[in-house]
Length: 149
Image (cartoon, rainbow, N blue to C red; front, top):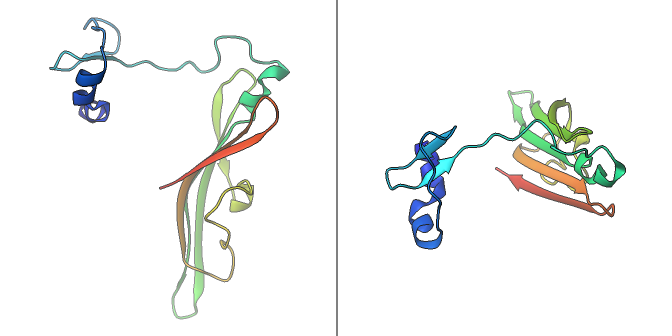
């Protein structure tokens, strides 16, 4: 909880926003010593309405690529190339339920992803971590966002 309070920037909240009081007996309620209340909520496993129709295909088009690590480097006298790669791919099902699947290689990443173009070549030194999200909007237009960390 202390990290959450730091993230909330309590000084800014007091100056800029009116926060309604949260009863301490509310489920998952936390009341800070300054009197600011936060109610922690958990998302449901899917949509609360029927989104199985084609008009909601944009939801099912969302993919999340979590490259937890990708590295390669030369090692040893022989100049052996040590490579390692780990990725998960997240997607949404018919009713909006989110699930992760294991990714097996950088070739599964969309072309728009940057940072691993030379992975698998002779052995340039690479260390990469990122989250990449892509989607198609309701008109079919492609969009994406990448955050390297």
